[in-house]
Length: 196
Image (cartoon, rainbow, N blue to C red; front, side, top):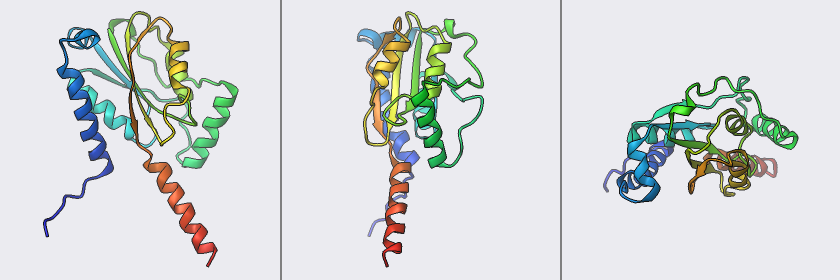
C-alpha cells in the first residue's frame, strides 16, 4: 500500500487558494484583472481560526501585495462559544468595535483585497469598523470570504452599503467550516455518552 501524505486543513486551504488566485493573476490581459499588475495592492483580512489568514498570506505572496491584519482593539474571547455570543450581541446592536490600528496610507492603494469569515450569516463587526474607517472611493475592492457552510449571508449588501463608491468586484468564496463541524461533532459525541 502506498503512503499517503497527511495533509493538514491549512495546507489544503492554502493549495486551493493558490490555485484559484493564480488563475486570477494569470489573466492579466482581461478587464479589471489587468489593473492588478499595475497598481499598489493591499490585502486586509480578519481571521478567527486562521482559514482567512491562509488565503490572505497566499494573496500577499502571489501578488506581491502589502498585508494588513484587521484586529479589534479589545480581542474577542478565545473560547468559540463566548466569541459567537459577543459577536451576536454586537451585530444585533449594530456595533462596530474600535480597531487596534487603521491603514494610515489607504489612499496609496489602487486595489484592496478584503478578507473575512462570515459570522452569523453576516460580515463580522470589525469589518464594519474597517469599512467605516477607510475611504475606498474609486478603489477596486476584491472580497475573499470564508464561511462555515451557510454562504455569504448579508455580507455583499454590507459591503455595498459601507463602500458605495468602491468598485466592488465579485467575491472569492470558500467554505471552511472545520471549527463549527468539530464543535458539533463533540456535542454529538457527548450526547451519545450521556445517553448510555
